[in-house]
Length: 390
Image (cartoon, rainbow, N blue to C red; front, side, top):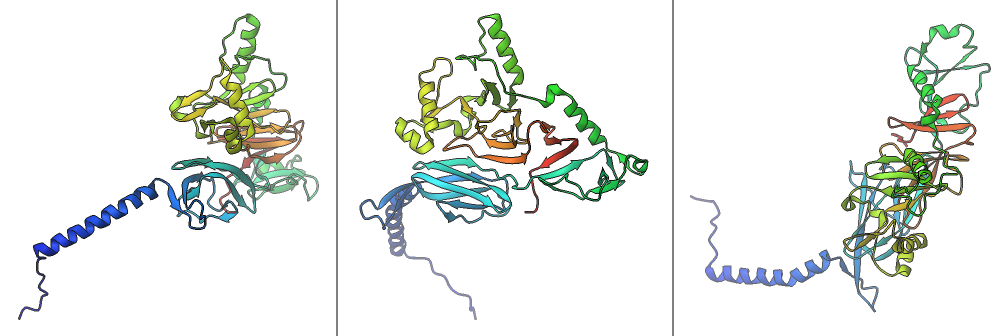
């Protein structure tokens, strides 16, 4: 006997009924799908206007161990091997974003969310306690840094912590150094700081090249000389240039318009709206640039883009500046009281975080081959910002 189930073909009448049922379902759900994908949502709590417009925020972070809060509510962590949070269905308007960790500096920013658009942003979090890798003149056979001291204690790491074990040896200068090896990295770092031309970018009494400071179009020998000095002090990565002018430091976009970073641009609109969503300083700069004939605004799609952003240096003198290693939107600054990292993104404000404290007369810093080297007194270090274990 044949016990296999027998499946009969649907009759023409039943196939026709199913077709019309599915067609009706499609026609009913299609407007809802368009409504949803266009960024509209139903808010039943709001009886006056139950239909709201929404957008999203795409937040890139440098560490997955951090916590992200949107308007005081913690956001679920992304999946493994992801370094970004994509937050959807956010009501349009200004929103408060916080990225934090107990061992890292907190990053905070107010961001505008526009309907049917995704707002991009990148956060950064530097260690609260500086992490240093010692670069000593002598090392052991296994590479352990060796310090020569007279007593059993030291004040080398009063402001920071070391990322690896170190060896303290008494009276290293009295022959005991023979059992240790010369550190070639120490010789290299020492030579870097010995070169004043590469280890100092002091922004004090910079020549005035106004109003054509970013055109470099000299009209006389004096102006040409001033502009040549400024060009020499400019630092460029990709299409981004760091340019000192009149005791200030600017991030200037020199690349193609279609590649201009998102934080240079705002949606066109009234100055009051721009001030509310992006900050009064942004609205003021846009107003000034709209009247300028030498540094004009850039129109790109439905956005208005600024060609330059002034960096916040906490009203202190800038003794050194460079791009943060591996980043084109973060800048390393040595100010009067320490070494800082600032973001170029100035929407609402610029986050500025202390990397290493110390008076400029005692501390020097420089970036070389993707490493941040520090000289504090007679000691050399590498500043470590990527902490594998928090």
